[in-house]
Amino acid sequence: MSKGGVQKTSKVFLIIGMSMLLLYTVSLLIPTFWAIITSFKERLDFITNKFGLPKVWTFDNYINAFDLLQVTVYDSLGRKDVYLSRMFFNSVIYALGCGFAHTLAPCLVSYAVAKYKFKFSGFIYNFVIVAMLLPSVGTLASEISIVKGLGIYDTFFGMFIMRFSFLGSNFLIFYAAFKSISWEYAEAGLMDGASHFKIFTQIMLPLVKTTFGAIFLLSFITYWNEYTTPMVFLPSNPTVAYGLYCFRFSPKSAITAVPMQMTACLLVSFPIFVVFVIFKNKIMGNLTMGGLKG
Image (cartoon, rainbow, N blue to C red):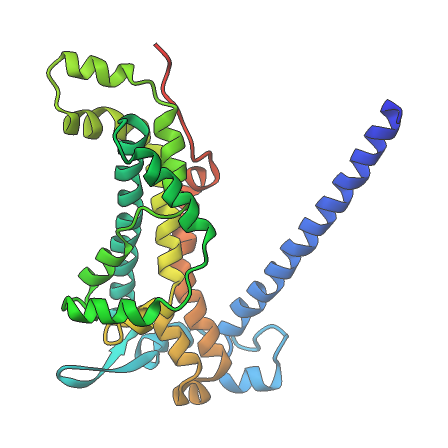
């Protein structure tokens, strides 16, 4: 094929790819725009005008959401109602703690495997690969039994312990990052009398702070949107995602209807939007970095 033919074919594929991305973007923007305008409608306005602009723009839904959006749970003291403000607080604790634990564990283990040659270093690396390939089915019942036996069920500390695992793709990302850093940095620290712990915390960890921050932010977003795990392991401490799910299928949703539901969705999404705007460069940037070879 001639050079002109190759360029023409590449241009066709580029146009097709860009058209598909444009359609995908539009498919996301349309429901988002509909949710925004619906959140400013009164209930009767929505019933008579589902897809048009509000006849009267009102912020009452955003004010009433903190009173109407609630979840009824049961703990050792009996029944209690958890409102939106408390669910936001629970989500912050849950997402920050689980995100940090889910980032720190692979960082520590990958550093040891990448920079220290010991008997089981190769086994740990291969074990992570195999664990990612093998499906994990039927473990929920055993996990519940273990956390209940340890006395950490329905506690945030228990969730942090469960998320402190080095298995997964985060291990491979940190492993590549530490592998690309020259050991001469550590040798210079050892010559100055630094301990291995000090070398890790003051030399190696700052060199991968961009990677650490990006993985932590992605983990935070993941756990903020997660609702199935809090429903199972934190039944009396609902997060906003958990509460939004229960609100959607509760009798109260029949009273507050769709405008209140859209308002709740936007309130839950707003913190993630702010996090993305502030840290978009870290999230969209590369997850790997290396040291300069001496």
